[in-house]
Amino acid sequence: MAIGVLKGREMIIEIGNDRLFEVWGKSKSITGMRLIEALPELKGQVFIGLLEAVYDTGEPFFGNGVLAMLERRGVLEETYFDFAYTPLRDETGVVSGVMVMATNVTSQVLARREVEEAEANLRGAIALADLGTWELDVAAGTVTYSDRIKSWFGFSGDTVPLSIVYNPIHEKDRSRVEAAIAAALQPGSAGIYDEEYTLVDRHTGYERIIHAQGRTFFDAQGKPVKITGTAQDVTEQRETRLALEQLVKMRTEELAATNEELAVINEELTESNKLLFRSNENLQQFAYIASHDLQEPLRKIQSFGDLLKKQYATALGDGVGHLDRMQSAASRMSMLIKDLLAFSRISTQPDASGAVSLNQVVNMVLADLDLTVQETGANVVISPLPIVQGDPSQLGQLFQNLLSNALKFRRWDEAGVPVVPQIRVHTRLVAAADLPPSVRPTRGAAAYHHIEVSDNGIGFDEKYVDRIFQVFQRLHGRSEFAGTGIGLAICAKVVANHGGAITAHSEPGQGATFSVYLPG
Image 1 (cartoon, one colour):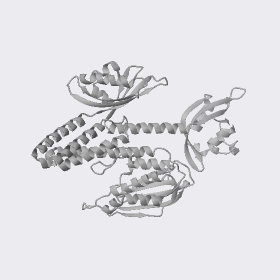
Image 2 (cartoon, helix red, strand yellow; image 1 turned 180 degrees about the vertical axis):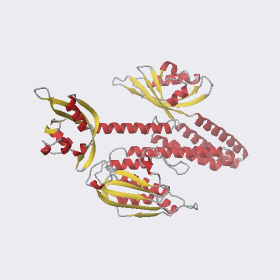
Image 3 (cartoon, helix red, strand yellow; image 1 turned 90 degrees about the vertical axis):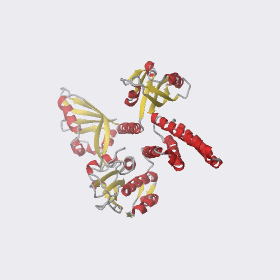
C-alpha cells in the first residue's frame, strides 16, 4: 500500500513510503514540493479538489476504482486506485495536513472490464443466434427466463416456480422433460440436460418446438446448485426438414418405379437422405453457448443443399428458393461464428517476445487476397515496413481485415463503373510526444511505428469512427457489402494487445485511411 503525508492546504509532500513514490513514478527528490508541482498532470483531475475538501472540512474521503492519469516515461497512463484521504490534526485539534493511503487496483478494474466485454459479446451472439437463456435455482425451486423464452412459455414474470414450469409443455413430452431435469440434477451425474419438446399456447393452441440445453453446477459436496442453459425455437427448421424428407421420399419412389437404370441413382439418393437426416440430427446438438461445434452441421447444410439443387432442382420447384435462403443463412452464421472465434482467440495478451517482419506478414496476406486483387485490378503499393515485437498470426489478422476491407468497399463512378482500387501502405516513426491527442496506445514507448493503410473507396462519415471498431457494428447493409461487423473490432483488439492504438480518417466518397500505431 502507498502511504504518504501532505502538509498544509498547499499539500506539501512531507513524507511517503517507497511504494508511494513508485506509484507516482517519481523519486524521493520531490519531497518538500507542492503536490501539483511534483505531479502537474493532476491538474484538471479530481484529486487536488478532494484533498482540499478534506483539509477544509476535516472529513475523510474514500474512493474506489478511481481513474488517475499519471505520467510515466513521458506517457500518460491510465491507473485505477482505491484510496483514503484522512485529515491530520495538530495538538490543538486544527487540521494540519492529509494522510494519503492508496492501493493500485488497475488489474482488477481491467479484468472486470474484460468480463463485462465478454458478457456483452456473448449476449450479442445469443441474440443473433435467436437463442434464449434460462437458469434453474435448485434451493429456491424457481426458474428464471430471458424475455424470449418467457414469451414462448406465456409467463408474465421473469422468475417462475418450478412446479408450474412444466404446464405449457405438451403432455406427450412433459414426463420426459421432468425426468431429464431430474437426471441432470442427480449427484454424480454429468449434469447435462439436452431435450427437444413442444410448447402449447394455452390461448391459441399454437404449438412451438423448442430445443433446450443446460449444464448443472454442483457445490463442493457434490450437491446440485443450479442449471444454466439456452433454448431455441426450432419449429421452422423441423417443418422444413419434414417437408424436405417427404418430398425426397416421394421423388425417390417415382424414380425407383421408372426403370432399372435409375437403381444406382435411387441408392445414392437413399444414402443422401440418411446423411441429410444425420446432418439435421447433428443440428440438435447446439452447444449452450455459440462455439466451433456449430460449424460442422452448417457445412452439411450447405453441402446437401447443393446436392438437392443439382440433382432435383426441377422436382423441388419453389423449394429451390427455400434451399437458397437456407444456405445463405447458414453461410452468414458460419462467417459470424468464425469471426467470433477469431475475436475470442485474440482477446488475450500475446507473447510479444518474437520479432515479426511486417513486410513478410503483408506479403502473405496479399498472397491470400491475390484472386480478389486480380479481379478488381487493384493497384497495391507497399512501402518498406518495420520489424516489430509481436504475434505473427494476430498481426496477419490485422492486415487481412484492413486490406480486404480496402478491396471490398470500392466505389463506382458517375457512369456506374467500378473504380479501380488504389491501396497504399506506408509507415514512419513518430515520437511519443508527437502522437495526436486522440491516440492513446495501451503500452508506453519512446516512439511508435505509424502505419497507414489508405484506399480510394466509398469512405465513411468520421462521426462513426469510434463505432466502426466495436463488435457487430456495420455502416452498410448486408445487401450492399458482405460481412459480420467484427473485422475492425478484431483489428482494434490486435493493436491493443500489441501495446498500440488504431484510428481512422475518411470522408464519404473520398476513400479511407486507417492509422495503426505500434511501439517502436
